Figure 1: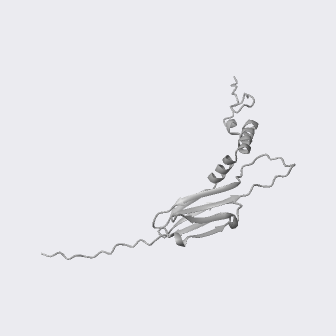
Figure 2: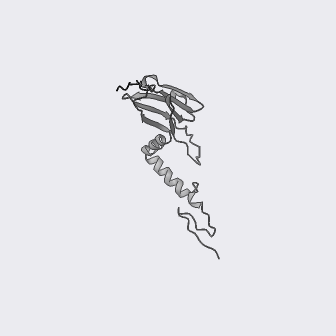
Figure 3: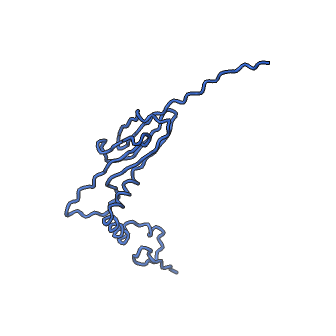
Length: 160
């Protein structure tokens, strides 16, 4: 007994059940739909680039530390800014690869375009002492914190 399963993306029917066939990104229907969407809307590309600027934010006792994966970018292509007092902004642009007339692309998975991430920091952040460095495609931004001063405790003598 064989079970005929239709291909949900419009491809040919098959007698072999393949649970991953729906996720096959080499499917011609999927790629042509994606290509049409990407070529017809620059805002989709820009939104993708913004979403692809992955950033980790951790807080240590001394500082807030941000790490952003920006593979293939040089430090000159990235901007770190402080806006409106307590907003840290990381932005930049990844250039699109030059296309040659005779090139035939099989996959385009790397994003290009502008990216922008903004983080509102707490009042304990020393925004005038922000430091940034970039190594091996990882941007590290360190924002020192104001030292927590423990309130002075004064013992009161109890009379009576």
